[in-house]
Amino acid sequence: MVDKIGVWMTCRMSEYLQTELAKRFNVFKSWEIPSKTDFFNQHSRSIRAVVGNGAHGADSSLIESLPYLEIISSHSSGLDKIDLVKCKEKIIRVTSTPDALTDEVADLAILLILATLRKICAGDQYVRNRMWNQGDFESTTRVSGKPVGIIGLGRIGSAIAKRLEAFCCSISYYSRSEKPNSGYKYYPNVIELAINCEILVIACSLSQSTRHIINREVIDALGPKGFLINIARGGHVDERELVLALVERRLGGAGLDVFEHEPEVPDQLIHLDNVVLSPHVGACTAETRMAMADLVVANLVAHFSDQPLITPVI
Ligand code: NAP
Image (tube, rainbow, N blue to C red; front, side, top):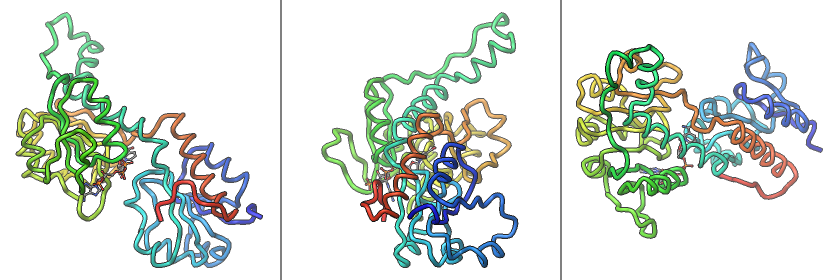
């Protein structure tokens, strides 16, 4: 039954995912199609599913172009690139791959904290550039025991907190709702959280209410001894203000996996020694990519076999 169903892939993803989809569906690869308008005019009737990811989701115009669309199966946990309001309106199901990537992203947050405060990348360059024999490398900043604030104590935020307990860090957080059973201190707003921590980790989802949740006021509350770690979405941070604060040393440093205008990264960040940068690779291990791909396919198969979705969002 399922092998005639058309699936629109919004961008190139892993070979494994493409192969697994092609075994079961008629896959249309957006990057191989020069004129989407012509293509949709001819084929939109057969496309009943979209597979996208955290960068290339399904906006209102794509959804409107596919009148027979029933489900969007996203290869991501973040859903900020999917027009969820339109999906609800048109009764289009949406699935994500939440738990498959939680540990990987939490691991990367810890990695960025350690690498930023202990200046691992600069130290690596110091050794490679044969500078060690000219003198010892500079002192860095201790991680163990530091107060850490987490914005968004969801799946990833909680996994980060659990890891930081092993570093004897005192953990506090800000979320929409207080989590009394977490055992961590809750602050009702980001400013108070920033004042009371030295490492501020962004782990919440991106929406209108969390866009630029990190602004000048929050950065100044964190201060010159503070570090900002972002493994969530670039849009959470007013990047212009962040760069200014880093250049002016009003902020101690930053570890960033995500950027406001990916894949563009501000020039100043490239040249700063108080930042560690990674190219949005929170979930990019072979193991997690495969588990996410399996979940994307399993959700589609469940939907088209009239079975309950495995990880439904709506
Ligand atoms: P999740 O379990 O849904 O948790 C999201 C958290 O965000 C919740 O704690 C929620 O608070 C909080 N939140 C939502 N709106 C908020 C607001 N207006 N103010 C304060 N907190 C708010 O999601 P997750 O699986 O942990 O993933 C979190 C995010 O990580 C994703 O949305 C995605 O953007 C990002 N991510 C990045 C990568 C990467 O490669 N770097 C990979 C995967 C995911 P409540 O609990 O109080 O509702």
